[in-house]
Image 1 (spheres, rainbow, N blue to C red):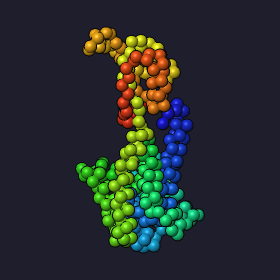
Image 2: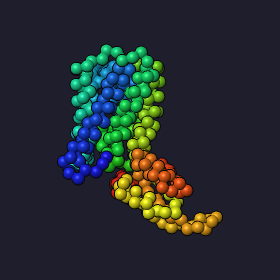
Image 3: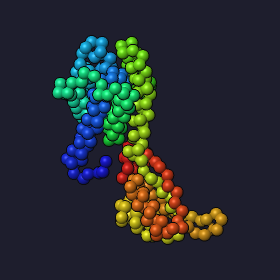
Image 4: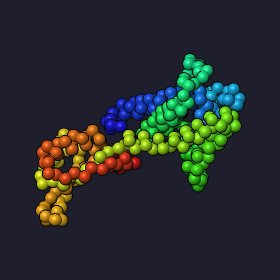
Length: 287
């Protein structure tokens, strides 16, 4: 997210992104996950099983469990728990409950369960990835992870995986093998999609430019693209000619402009361009 100087607008932008992310997740959960009884993904996964077994509303069950987990978070984590997580968790719970009342679904939207499974995986994964990228979460089992991380030495990833596996296993008994198998696929694909989306959100291009005339290139990087660069001198191993190496990193849209500029200003320059999704420092990730 672009850095904003005014604290109010920075906070407003962050909460706007959280709201959008949660609504993306809610659409995937309510319109594709709940009607098909896909039982993967923490609290909402268990909600589908509990709803079928007890005829209790999946949205209401999600609301109650998320509220209880928030209370546990305040008890065990204190003030450092995070307002972003509280806001995201309550927004998701309330949105699901409201949708159940204003737009009740008696059956899935289509007759293609595999198609709906793709949306049930992809939409929540995109929303979750955006939340993770700005340092927030949607609550639920993430709160359990925070508590375990602070107060125990348990492997958090294993514990959360066991929670998801338990929900998927129960779907075999409640909904039958077909839905259980779909839920198994969803569980396997969920984390892969989240990781891939996060990488693409943060993807940057790293340049190593070997050239004879670095001044116009550096000027373009600094004054046009508003990035910085590191310059150092090198020598060709075969020709022993003196060369200058410019090292810089930037977003993909900026990288295309730089590449085209260099090809026009110095066609003989050698460019090594690589991808990176985790860059720590000013102008990129700060933690």
